[in-house]
Structure formats: C-alpha cells, structure tokens
Amino acid sequence: MNTIRQEYLNRLNEEFKNMSDTLIEQLELLSLQINGNNDTNLFEKIKINEKSINKSEVIIREEIVNTIVLNSPKASDLRRIIAYFDMIGDMERAADLLYNTSKRMTELFEKDSLYELYQSDVTFLYEKANNMIQNAIFAFLREDQDIAKNVIASDDIVDKLHADLQKKMLSMTIPEKYPHMLADSLNIGRISYNIERIGDSATNIAEAVIFLTEGKDIKHNHE
Image 1: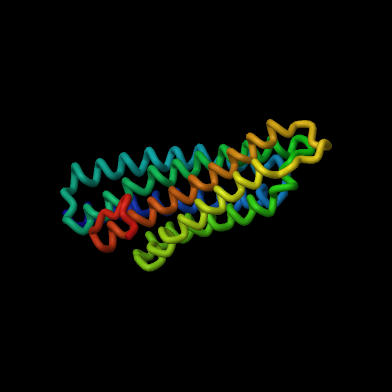
Image 2 (image 1 turned 60 degrees about the vertical axis):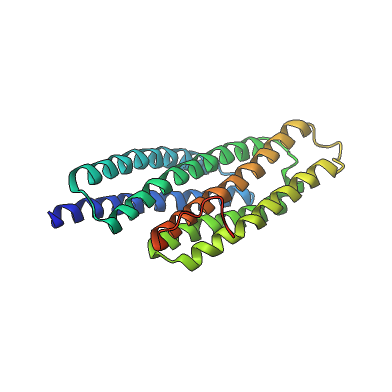
C-alpha cells in the first residue's frame, strides 16, 4: 500500500515538475519579447506552451483526486497534496497572464508604437515579477520557507512599480509621431497590470510553500 501511495505521489511530483518547467520557459520567452525581440516565433511557442500548461493542470487535478480517494494519504502527504492543489491554479493563471501579455507585445511590434518610451520601465517591472515566480517555484521544490517569505515581501515592490508606471503614462506628454497612441497606451497599461498580477500569483505560490513547511495558512496576512 505504501508503495502504491508513493507511486501516485511520485507521478504527481513529476507532472508538477513538467508544468513548472514549462512555465519557467514561458517566463524566459516573454522576457525576450519584453526586451524588444519581435520574432513572431516567440508568440507561437508561448501559445503551444500555454496549451501544455492547461493540460498539465487537468492531469495534476486528476492525480490529486486519485491520490486522496485511493490511498488515504497520511497528514504530511495530504498537506503537500493540498499545497499542489493551491499552486497549480496560480501557475495556470500566471500562464494565462503570460500568454495575454505576449499577445499584446506582438500587437505593439506590428507598428511603430509607444512601447519604446516605456520599455525600460516595463522591463524592470517584469524582471522583478519574473524573479518572484521563479523563486516561488524553487522555494516549493526545495521546501525553503525563507525564499518563500522573501517572495512575499517583494510583492509590495512590484505593486509600487506598476503604480509608478501607470502614473508616468498618465502624466507624460506623448510626441505626435505616434499615430496609435490610444491603442498603444491601452496595451502597455494592460501589460503592466498583467505583470503585477503575475507577481500576485508568485505570492500565492509562496504562501503555499509556507503552508507546506509550517502548516500555516497566511493568506491575506503577511505581518
């Protein structure tokens, strides 16, 4: 019975690793776009990976149900399974945000856009959110609560960078040479919002790490 239970847990862990590896690849592909690479193949690859992540989420949820129903996992295993359940939803949401951001970046690259005026701000914001979610996944795999707590502490920084970018966009005088100013502004504003939400997903993943390692539910309480 223990061998069967461990087999289910190993399959769950392996599928989670596949999902997290694909999400990290998504982060790196979008980083290339954010930094100005307008190769359309990047978006096509992100689109393929998005489908893979959605498939992994379904598989993991099925594995979780099977593990609980068929194996009656002990308390420590059950806590890990619950942490998986919490995390995969946030990882799938982060993947959706990455896909939507990539799509908007592709639209900006189709013409001369405002993005060149805000690229450094967006890049800095994205680097912070990217580091957050990669560190959150690493913290889970290593069960490292210190890294998880650092991720949670970084959320305020990403929130402020997003707010600062929005203020800059509202106050900046735009040169007349940009013919699609309104559409570009909407795209850049949404990109900034999506990145901020990716940071929120990283925070939620880090909270799952705290639950796994300490058995504490700290959602909405980061004191």
